[in-house]
Length: 393
Image (cartoon, rainbow, N blue to C red; front, side, top):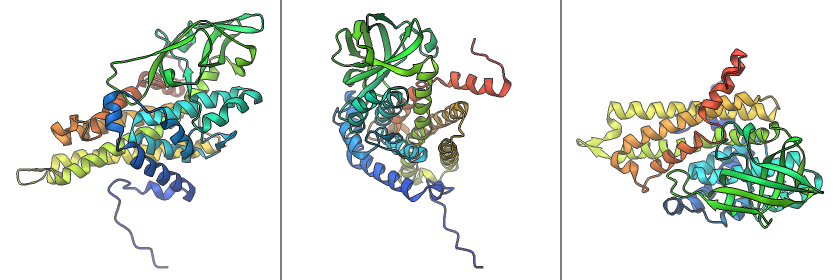
């Protein structure tokens, strides 16, 4: 039998991870990539500089089919975990803020209702959220309780058949543009989740300003002061801290892929720049130090993408442990940040301007390193699994 000819490696997908995708997954990749190229990239530097994200981006992402795309029914496509991951990668190749919008909508707010809500709640909220007509946010973190959400002070008490919410949530993506918030609060029955519509009396929000990271993303504080919601606002199946943590695990999985999108954008930019930027009469890509940086970046980009694919396939088989997602998030965000920093050095002074995407990605990844669990927390999660010893306290 004659062997097929060996093709030259691609300069970005060097080990041909794309060959491991299905035709449907490649279609998702190409569709989302085209959307980012046409709708996001021409505007993202301006959005980042202005510290704003257009509200109508939600309906555009809904039309694209990426909001809650891994959920089934209620207007959601029911795509596989890898297809969802590939979409996250392409969105974050545009900007972490765009991927964050989709992640918070689909993997936090929608997923919480999908998994812990009743049928009436699902029918009432999910179809419009899938279309991007309604925007959701996820209220878990508080000013003093980020890595330790079990200590949250936000409370919910019964008043007849209603619930009264009091407290503050902090660092909430989409908070001030959301039509509803999924809010977690301490009750006499433990931590419970509630759907709180925007117009509810006693619910207010304010934007967090002067950010130097995730600027093309709305980040808010949510305030609940005697906020009264009816009995049917309670998510009936969401009991205990495990409920919001299950939602976070879905969002962390998207970050495993998304961070590689930011990394790819930085690597591609540095690679092209190195071939055209001339110093000492030749392109800087022809110097050993620059090639060493590029190869290190390529190596971690391909390894991280392969890791994301493996975790995705395991997730599709129902065989992925939450600690595995922690390990993948820990690795991929850390390496993506290092790739961005290396790319910045190749671009020199040009690397700190918004004419190129590198400094924007690098700043964004500083937030991605922290949210959905800091690198320290994911280190301890993995450490506990391999030693059997809890080092959190």
